[in-house]
Every structure is written in structure tokens, then in C-alpha cells.
Length: 393
Image 1 (spheres, rainbow, N blue to C red):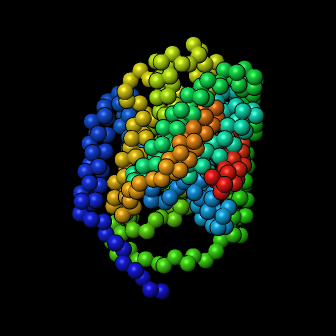
Image 2 (cartoon, rainbow, N blue to C red):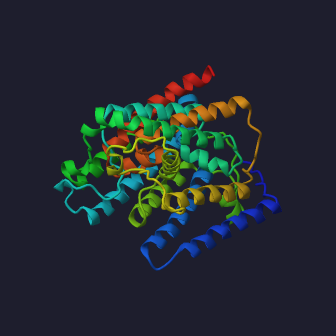
């Protein structure tokens, strides 16, 4: 088969990527210290940078890979998500034994994304899925696409801040109506870690086998990488490669800092701003008692999740520069409006679901939380509805 040459980025792009990469390393070194809090900040920045690199190089976007399968019957991206879930499930279940040796004791693992099961979760996941379809990405993908020059994503993220604020206003009545009495189901508490792990792996394996029935021969030209740079920043990586590495990263992140998630900082910024303006209720009933992408009124500039997001955006920008994927374009007004509206739905849904496709779905399923599976199902329903809406936009 004939091969084609890989195009190298310009000198300015390579130089800027080098500056960004060195800046991340230097910032992580400056943040690091002897105490655990300083180490957590440093590791959060580095973890976010690695996450951004993996997202950008493997096109790890929950909406994009789902749309690829729905519209083109291409299962590769969904198989990548399944690979991440399988590796993370194994890693989480191995780590949990150190925190909760007896899962039947009634205790939940610290900070794990195990949320309540109620109709509110189904509604918020559906709204989140519609928001993904309208805006064209999940929240994590909007963040890494900023590094590719997709400035319309700024409108989606601004809309998400508005959505978080609206979610806070809805929280108290919905909490008292349904969430307060909703059960929190953690699968290992049922029959132990072994049964939980085998059950999830069997389900993921069944989904993978079903998807493999739709695999088609690739028609893309094969490009041979002649050096390490071309291997890393030539063609996009297969999504399953990014998925496997994200599964390992999720396990290490939970062990050293906390579960992967990208909405805690966005929600905290929205909560802090709204609280400062006096727009929030005096008390958000029970919100701070739940795990997940927890929000709080910010008392310090630096936070673990904030640095994680910063590392994600900067590293994805450097990766896009080296790969020639940094292609800024002027968005149309209709695209900006669609991103803004979709972002509002993303923020509202993720606030009431206590996380997004990274926190509630990815980290939740890895942790054996039934709420993660419920979010995944209703999020898919939302994507299907959102695609129908988008066709008539």
C-alpha cells in the first residue's frame, strides 16, 4: 500500500508548543512541596496535561464517537470508551481494597463518584445529552478543542456557567422532592469486589462484542511514521489507545488526588459568583454531602480541579500545534448561539447529575456506581433527541 508523508508543523508552532510544555513542567515543579496539598496541586496540573494530550491525540469525545456510530456505524470510538472503562474498573477495584476492605460495611470509598438514583438523574442526563448534541461536544471535549482553535467552545463553556447557576436554583426543590430519599447503589456492597468486577467486565465485554459486529475495513490511507515525533503527532491515535491510557490515568488519579472530573471548577466558579451577588439560596440542601464533582464557594485561587483543567487546555494546545491541528476559524452566529444554548443544557445537566460524562459516567462506572450506568443510558437518549433537534436547527 502506498504511503504518504507526514506534514511537519511550522517552526513557530513547534517553538510555542515547546514553551507551553516547559511552562507546564516548571509550574508543576513550583507548585510541588513537602506537604500533601502542594503535591496534589502539582499532580493535578500534570494529570490534567496528560489527560488533555490523550483527549486531543485520540479524539476522545463522548459525543463525537457516539455520533460516528449512530450516523456512520463506526464503532471505533465507542470501543475506546469501553477500553477506558474496563481498565479503570480493574484499577479502581484493586485500589478500593485499601480504603474499604469490607464493601458490605455500609461505607463508601472516599470521594468516589457514587451518586443517588432518582428520576432527577435520568432527566439531567437526558438534558446533558441534548446539550452535547446541540453544542457538538461534551464539556471535556470543548476544553481540549479550545487548544485546537475552536473558539466557539468558549460560548459553550460560558453557557455551562449559566446552566450551573440555573441548576443551583433548581436544586433545593428537586432535592427535597426526590434526591433526598433516593438510594445510593454501589455494586461492590452487593456481593463484593469480585462479583462487581466480573459483572461490569461481562457487560462491557458484551457491548464490545456487539460493536465489533459493525467494524468495517478502514479506507484511510496508511501513513508510516519515520520517527517518534511522527508517531506521536502524525495521524490521530486509535481511540482504544487513548482509552487504555485514560483508564490507567484514572486509577492513578484516584489513588493520589481524586477521581477524574472536569466540572467541579466550573461549578465552583458559578457558585462563587452567584453567591457573591446574592442570587443563591442561603443553603443548598444536602449538596455538599454527596461525592462526585462537588462544587463549593471558592476561598482560594488555586484548586486541584482548576489546575487539572488548566493543564488539559494548555497540553491540548501544545499537542494541536505539534500535530498541525491548531486551526482557528471564525464561527458563524448560528454556531455561537447553538453552542451557548447547548452549554446551558450541559451545565444544568451536570450540576444536577453531580458530574458529566467524565465524572459521573467514566469515573462512576469505574467505581462500580449504578448511577454511572443510569447516566450513560439516559445520556444516549439525550444525544438521539439532540441530533433530531440539530437537524432542524
